[in-house]
Amino acid sequence: MFSYNQVSAKLSLTSLLLVLGLVIFVFCLGLVLMLSLVASPVPSFEAAIAAYTNLKKSGVSNPVTAVLLNFRSYDTLLELAVLFAVVVIMLPANKTYKIESAANVTFSQIATINLVRKILPLTIVMSGYLLWTGASQPGGAFQAGALLAGGGLMALFSKAISIRFEHTLWRFALAGALAAFIFAGAATHWLTGGFLLYPSKQAGLFIISIEFAATFSISITLVLFYWVITTFHLTTHLTTHLTNHPATRQTDSS
Image (tube, one colour):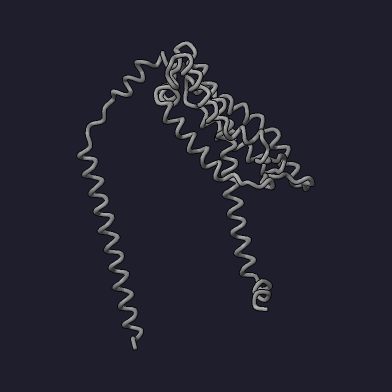
């Protein structure tokens, strides 16, 4: 039979070994990262030079937008495809899945609703500005979509609107970015013979059309992600609370 001192000594030794192992692991990881940085080749600026050289042919004057939606549009297409795949997984098959607003609001919510009604139009205008200015300055569909999603969440928090994701309109909006990219690829293949190979004169029109559709898709997708995560958290918390409730335990025991 072990005494208290023997058990404490074994625990102290185990803790010391774990800490020592962690220190050795962190040291080895840092050493590997340092050696990889030393052995890595000198960064080349050929891609950046090529992007700036062909910037006039891209249809936009912002090099970041030109790279994401013209020179390396395949990467952005795949990113949106992965995002849409996650949306398909998160969308349920039943027709009761919705973000619903309450019909009867309390007096304390009236001020919030009035505030949202004043802020939401400004958010939409700022989102449109970020979308439009992305062609020449920092901005674009992702920034505009994130801002628009923030405005949508404010409206949902105030229970001023409701979103039914089983509705066909919302489903089309979620798939709008990927559909716009595929349609643009088919159109450019018919015009130039290459998938997503934009004509020089119409390149800007193709890019702004894709970004316009992507803004709505990204904003609704972010709202959906937040709703699913919040619903999962509340469901888990409620299940745990009901499981640990004394009445539930008495029912199970009986």
